[in-house]
Length: 572
Image 1: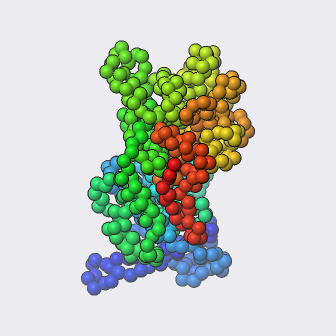
Image 2: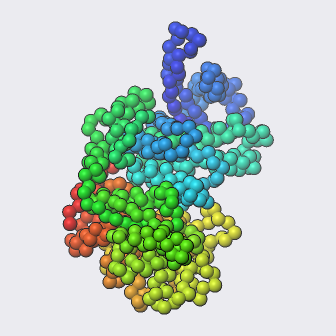
Image 3: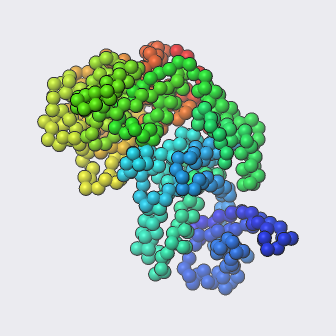
């Protein structure tokens, strides 16, 4: 035996016996590595008995009449895990993710440790090869997992860090079962959907539910799984408050037999303060988002959320102007002049410009035109992943005079390959071959704006998702002309952060800071963009950045294992 776990569940009354009453049954579930002979010996000796739960459950379980000696040394400190399943049939986009996140937020405010699992029916192993048009954004986790965008909602609401195993797909389950069959784990039995696939799903959920997702490494007590009535609200941040008002806490406490503190919950009080604050914002800040997937907002879910978090932090209402980068190109002027002029009007009327990540050559020339405009007009600019690479290409063409400068992704024969493919990338396979997950970036300049925004730390850990990088062999040419690579990897071989001298805010980052942005802890690069767009960045920096984006919402020092963030109004 390697695991002993006690679960409790309510057994309803037998409908065929009107006078029967429901009862609570305790099950000791034991995962055994024993051979069939050893198991039979335990049965023969009377140590365990094998039976079936009443019809309607259809499960076989082991019930101990006495504990064998070899089990007595095991710890029984495990808290009985509680599971909450959120389902909405086969319809997508009806709010299951927000409901699951909100329920988790409420329970976390009660002092419980909460984790979340998303179950998807598709055969894909993960979401890494999905088209943004079909399934929206691909969210990246610390361990490099490419998962459904709902896991981004879980992390943002609950302020936790999940792993790729928190996104369960049919493809993962079948792959796991097939691998076990190939290794002989099923001892020659016929592997079938029932019971092997169904058992694998249950085992996966029960195992992952025990993985710590908070910084304190405490095992979760509640697992919210997305597979209640909420009317329209002014923002998604009001959903947890609405559910709490409807008595969700009392319901779950009674239904799941949980004992929680019913005293005023500080975390929800601060959440309400944040939601109220978002409703009374008067000043506006406008950001132009220049990309190729702008027809589907879900393609940039985390980017939009990161902008919202930062706008809220500086007490401004966010307005995002979506611009298809192809509409900025001269070829559009000849074909659809109205669309061309509308796109440029949107760009020129914005207070800041953002070029997010992406793949493929389509629309890249339009993105570089937007970057060129932001650089020349001294408009705040943030380039993320591809947005940073294109900023380097634009600078090489128009400042260094390398008219043929390009990325080898778009022009392998370029005379000036300022962006090149990483040597470890396998061009013959798309899935899982990128530089993925949390990586360390070391600051190389003490005067860097980004270093100040991050709180003057020496290094940061952010999430990556890319196959190409700035060519380190050409770095010195850019530095001589004012484009500084202020952040590099630990070895100093990969360019991670670029800043332009004598500009109000011209920043490019190779990583994806939007994946770690939180409602009460905005991402520093996005925070800097919003500050610059609102004309408040220099004032903030001149005060010594006493409230850095990562520290401005301080955690309670009460010693509670569940973080209690404080909201602080920013004053400049």
